[in-house]
Image (cartoon, rainbow, N blue to C red; front, side):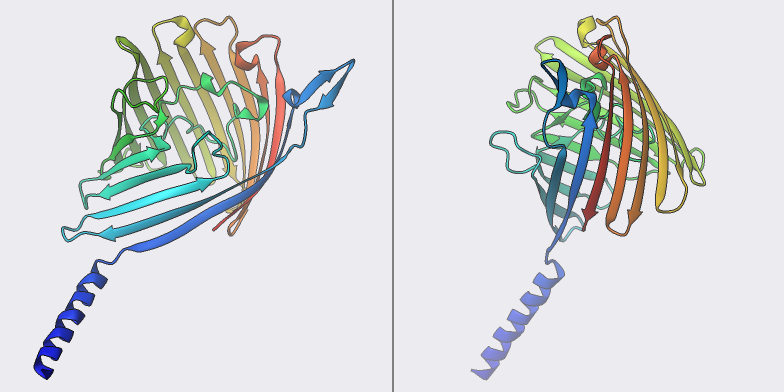
Length: 328
């Protein structure tokens, strides 16, 4: 009886050791921020004067949970989801949620149930800035003027291992996914080299194709380059979107420079131009930004000016934003 008990306890202990070796982990992270924004478009004409539209203070916060575990073959799997109070679309509770498979040397494969990013959307805004881009929505500039690929639900994304500073990313959404509106199928890829050619130089190239309808495609192309030396970073982004009509064709370029005055304080200057084939005017934007970081607290701000907002020659706008955020 004692011998049987000992064997049983030994087997139980061995099982516990095995489980412990492959036990998963759970981590949490999050952020909260308070912003004050103002711009010309926040004012409405009332009678003969102007009246503010409303409270210009806002708060956003998010919590991200990630669970992960290892497999016997050396691969690992993680599941993550993020709850974001900015996500107010009907029926959407989670901002992003997905599964990632790390193949232990052959890259990572991700599936996003909601909020997935393809290869192009990860490189569309690489012009340097200290806080936000010159075309940021605080000025009501048309962010659709920036070719940026697709962020979608039910998306597959593969990212290769780093080969001498070079990584390849592929994004894919099967046709017929109802939540991908108005697309009926999508695929893109990007190649990024960081420091492999010249120390401090990062270059990236991406291409994508969207099937907006059967037999109708929209092609996106993005190229960017940044160079950093000391506290100085300069860079440029050039992109284009070619659709079946001039109304769905856009050429975009942006240039930026940032300088880290200290390890915690940076300033930046950013300009951009968007040319839509069907419009007579180009949208032109200029932005000045700054940011300061102390531990988990960041303070940032910008002043942006946009001429010909959404290609409208009668609409020139200036806006600014001040933000305090905390991350844990």
